[in-house]
Image: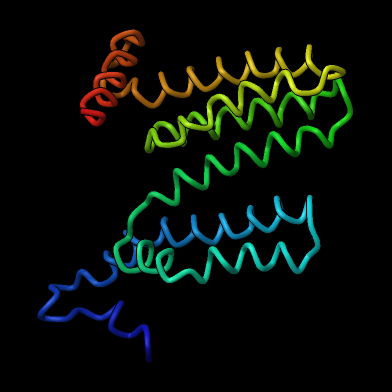
Length: 187
């Protein structure tokens, strides 16, 4: 009975209640995903109680609930992808050196980071952290530098593929168009 008004037309809202729910759903699902990622990251370094506490602190924060559920802001989608990039880098350290899985985790981190930048460029502050990760462990430095370069290339290809529909068959113009959008938004 509580959700009945969402799926039944109302004269005052012209039947757009279901649309409002669908518009807010990506932000809500992203917040839940961030809660899972926070739990996984904190659990790597602390007990289950601290991990649950960190996830609950984010998920039950009134600002988080209000921004996603009431306003439907999708900032959490970009933030979640940036957090996924950090998790993927941490996860790559669990794999054996010179393994394909380590390469895939690092490339996946760069793809998540690149997609986050395509949504909102605020995650750019994490760029030095992602680059520095390649140089942290001297025993894995060579593999991580190669994986980081491959990840950067994959992120650029992703940017071209996302911008390509706006400038078909001209990848340089597509990247220029994308850069102009960022420059306009920064101004």
